[in-house]
Image 1 (spheres, each protein chain N blue to C red):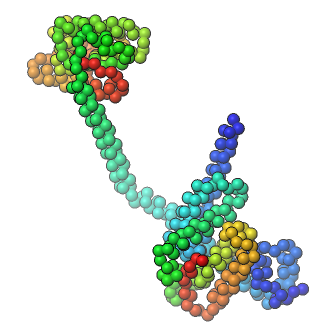
Image 2 (image 1 turned 180 degrees about the horizontal axis):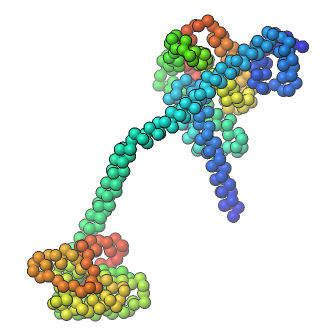
Image 3 (image 1 turned 90 degrees about the vertical axis):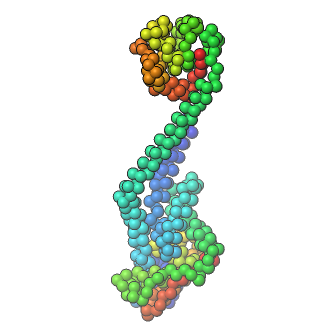
Length: 248
Length: 184
């Protein structure tokens, strides 16, 4: 049997920390019961260990609680901030969309302005192998228009089985007169072509229609013709989608 | 096929590791706080530890060794932060760990405050060992691995720490001036 002074502090520390093997633990336990001084030392060490553990035991919990509380507080107290952020995001998105749309319109205007009109009999060559084409009717000369219609019809028949082939006839300004059922001899023919071929769309510019009506030259359209708010917008849209552009 | 299986297994393992990492946050904070007695600093150290651990979690071969590895990362992050702060200010001159007044010592948390003050008087190396053993119940071998020193050194530091704490705590109501010592 060892007495109190035979055990070093390291030994007692190892005992309370569970670092000793079974035999050594049993021996100290036995000595502890028979030696009040040793029991006191062991007890002091245990109390110290427990005090240290207790001192910091609530630290993590309180830290986590505070963080959770802060999150809840933020969520509940900053609804207005979140709503504002949402509005700002929506505004920025709209702005970006509008800027993008504005860029497209500018490009379309430049495209329309810089493209030289072709002669009606050159239409077939101008289209070439393109499968999606916007033909812009910006003017109407009755004598030449027959050739334009013939070439469009030829191309539609030739590519009737090609589902990828599409022609969009966009009329604006004086070109709308070609679609006027009250004055154009080709209006009904164009309308019939639009009904016959799914690959043909005929589109009239609403702005131009309004201007002609204001100048007391109202245009009477047939039912198969689509009205778009703006020919420039329509060209911009198709251009963005990769369609070719031909001005007549 | 086997590579897909490996990927799936890795993903499950990583998820488990990440889950354990997150659940260890509170314990890491408690330890960092016990070392620094500064909740802001403890929070920063834990953040650094979590980031470092998340980035290197693949290096943990045995999921059961995660605890020891995590506290080793914590220890390294803590020392790095101390060194950075030491470059800017003399930590020994200005950092008082405990703002307790004699009145607060006599508050209902007198004992806990006294222990904190006493812990604060320890050199960091001693404080680190005693808190890892007494707060997290790490074995001596685990602590030796965490702070990368021999087992005998751990026992020596632990013993010296406890002796100092006993002396400080048993001293009759002395002024427990708490100064964070410069990390060696």
